[in-house]
Length: 287
Ligand code: NAI
Image (cartoon, rainbow, N blue to C red):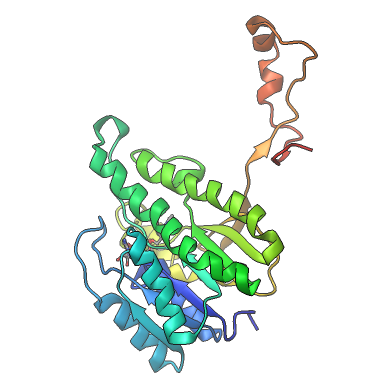
């Protein structure tokens, strides 16, 4: 078993794309699912409860348990209502999968405040709102699983996505600390970076790549990280198209000085500062 049987799982933005695949797999593995989706267009405009309801219908038709919710993760009350929907329907909440997302691609030079803010509101604030609403329950019941959806655009950068990349890397910063604060309450926090053919990526990936990138490839990584059996916390995993691989922030051995170096002295050692040979996963404070 996948370790989520009977657990109550919220998946945001689960009316289509990757989130829908997550919701279907959680239900198939015996979890009870809140399918949240605002029913927005790719850029976040528009609204309809139909997307969430149709995924709930699919789950129920297959014999699973699910309820629909059409609240907006970008609003604090929306985050609270999504968590309340889980508690009202199923009496508890065990897992939050923060997946809802939008795009406003534009080069930094041309970006408007609205394009910057809209992305932070859905990805970073949206994850904050839903996770913040669930957190006290996770602590009280000494069990919880937080999954955030990051992106290689944040982890590695992507032309035209400075707003999105900043939000997605911000989410990695969030789980780094949630992992520390949640540890003694048996609450884990991890990140998944999907690589999948959805409406979000239909004009980004080549035709050949899109064929190999069914969103269902991503979901086993999310369900595993949400499982009772998974003790990992504070990690990020890229998942899609058959590859599952951890990405981590590494620290090089670097160069050490006993006295404050001159700029010239530091510059002379710069190759050693930046050489990643022997790098290890970074820790705070360092070992
Ligand atoms: P998608 O556009 O198919 O799905 C996103 C869903 O979120 C939509 O159904 C939309 O209605 C919903 N949504 C948007 N704003 C919302 C809000 N304020 N409240 C509630 N729901 C809202 O896109 P896709 O590809 O399935 O993306 C899912 C997540 O994966 C996103 O966070 C995205 O940034 C991330 N991602 C996807 C990648 C890919 O290769 N498809 C790559 C890296 C990250």
